[in-house]
Length: 293
Image 1 (cartoon, helix red, strand yellow):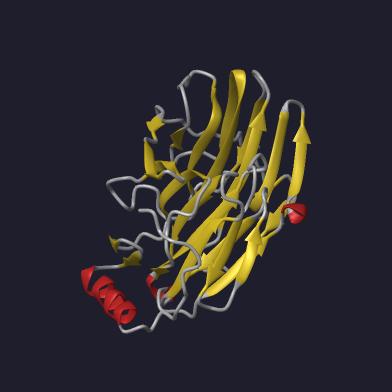
Image 2: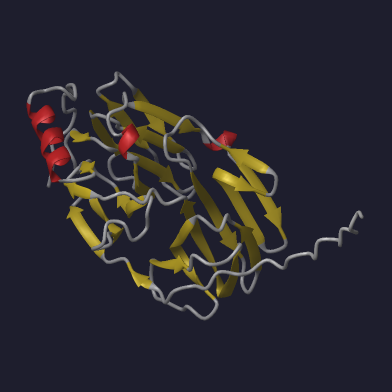
């Protein structure tokens, strides 16, 4: 006998809880600027993300330096007074304009350099370290970019969302990076609300650039972490409005070890990265400006 199939009962989306604000202390790089830093003591706390620097740079502060085992992702806010000159030992040399994104997937290792194009005009943005799974840590380095004009903007009542990476409101942005993530630049006017669907498997947090969410008033930039359980992130701006960058991605779930700009699965791998850098196997990149720190 055939049994009748009962219609599936519609499921109500479950909102993720929000942590108390996480301090992102200001760290001075030198007279050229600095960053509000989110550097968790537990490197896997934000898996697949390792750290975030919310920077203001008006002068060059770093000489060319190596990366290996992860991706260095630079996103410039639209209000940035100027952009960054980006160079790698892959032969790449380009300009990251305000509102644009540059993704440098270091793989087995390469040299990297970023500096403000116009000294005295501060570049304002985020640099995010995104981990690579063990299977991709020795891959050939690669670089990807998205210009400001390519980034879709979704506007709703009281809300504006730049879909830089990931999915939102019918827009899907992926490229050849080994670790796909979501990066949404969200601005809410005073007391406005917005709901952002996310896969349950994704970890998620926000870097708050200005203002605050309702019930989470903080003076200055800070971070908020969202609980793992739930289908959506529900955002409600406070009376002054808020601008935040929502970052989310599927955890890699592997052991993690780091030393400076090298991220491996253990100390043996990190030491091997250091030796390869010392032997010159990550390429060459001549400095074009003096380091000040």
